[in-house]
Length: 396
Image (tube, rainbow, N blue to C red; front, side, top):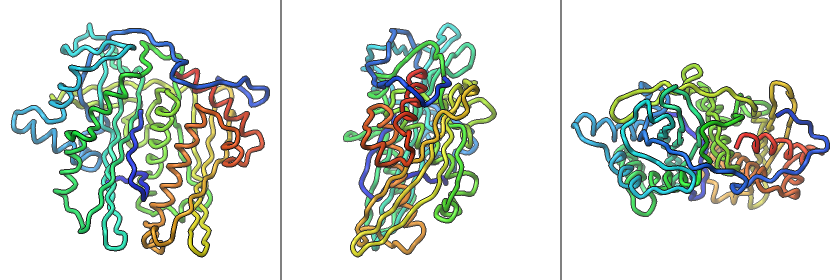
């Protein structure tokens, strides 16, 4: 089963969620208010599994069982039932969401699709911290032409603490509760986020992560099982695109490795119908280098540092940004678990990396020169940030 970024703290995160040089760049502010919204009609397609459904046992096993169990009994799944209830009260000042059956006349359509589901156990001092993460994408597509118009990634992370090692039934119960719970329901939260989406019939430019590379001491720090099959590459890309979409109010073309077949995204719905949706080509590329980690030990604290480089480019301008970023997290030794264990250390490094990406994507929307100065070694970091903001603004 793939793994993704989890911290040691109790966290809940939902991720909703042109060629220019760095000299003499006009300051650009990215806010939701900048987006001009037009009222359009959109048909609701329902809940879907994104990617190869034959890989459901590794991609989203517990969610797939919820749907498959209902299908085998000729019933409607609890996921579809919950969505039907929430959809009835859905309102948006940007678009009308209609629930009639999809036909060719329903040109613009929307689906809520699951891209992955992860369960990760960490044994710390005889207790088990288990992280449950589910990735959902809001997919806006042209039903007639079978092509994607835009994708808004969302990420949900929930932690549980167990006194004894949890079993498969425990994990299934928690995943089920994330879809049906009253205190927090990821379906209801998804629809809440959907209300403020920037919906258009077409987008002039598309941005997304093109490539992820491991440099420096990354291959020594990252456990081999995460490197195998490019798991860590997908982790970083999905983490970045989800936070970029959430914090900068921009749709993102999904990272292709592991989720896509060719240049299309497969969507399999609860009624077993399937669509192959063509992805838009990238206009603006983001390449990420995971360029290593640092560790510093003091008497009562351990310092963990994560480092990345964010490069952006277009076909005409190959070197718009080359931002070298880093962040350090100090952890009490007694709270860090078995720090001699490589995977226990990796959990902390992943937490630092997640915080760095989150902070960076927030800074793209709300510029803070002090943050940029503290976390980047580039002398022209401020100018590079402005250049990247221009690309994001043109992709909104």
